[in-house]
View: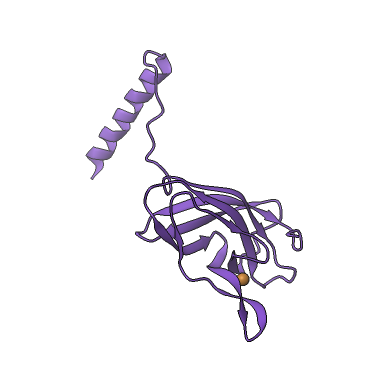
Length: 160
Ligand SMILES: [Cu+2]
């Protein structure tokens, strides 16, 4: 078990040595593309609940310009025990929020997650999540690809 570790360390040092000498124009290692290709998320924010312990809402603007259609099927919010997509609909004569069915998304679509409409509900937030911080939000699409982005944490009542 030990030998490969030592070997790897030696190789790493070798690489560092070269880079330090400036003999090679070091390119940062090409990173594997992160997230869902063609998906762009902007204006992501988490609005804290007025009453601690209540769910927080997450809003953002999603644009998709990729070729593969998918359904938005799952969302996770850092610092929340669970999270789900909600939308508003009429239920026994009243507008109220309810879980959203998996949302089909295709090339060219723009979807707004905004107050009074589709949104993400983050349940059982950790007290570590505070105004001015950021949390990572991860969308999972059908097929299992994930797309993560930071959401700014805002004070309760700042959404309107
Ligand atoms: Cu909700």
